[in-house]
Length: 133
Image (cartoon, rainbow, N blue to C red; front, top):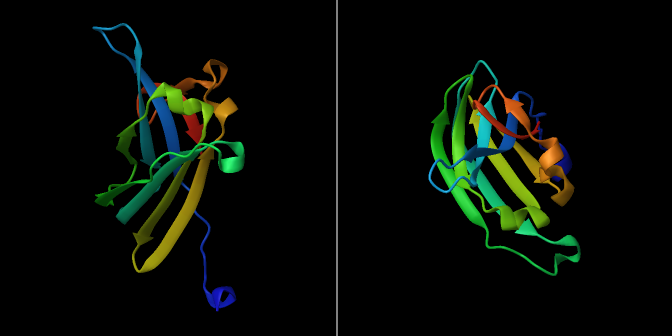
């Protein structure tokens, strides 16, 4: 039964939508990062990403990303994201192991969260971005 499964709380792991100015086009390039602020390695990391509008009138494809591990106090570039998608709810479902224990967490970036006013410098990726812990 689902009630019998232990779902540990995810702490020290966050997602960020970041930006870096492209020196050629002078426009911003946007990226999604998974940040491991823990002092332990995350193993067998699976990230599902998708976007949808309120009421599910518009949906994107689901993308799946996998990495064998993310070292302590590092980050992993998940994907490039187009600014056109900021008008959608961007969902990232992250699952990983620490030892033999499975963790998972859903990160939602609502359309208003990726507004210019919410970008600030994120030390762990050395870029401006919007951080979701």
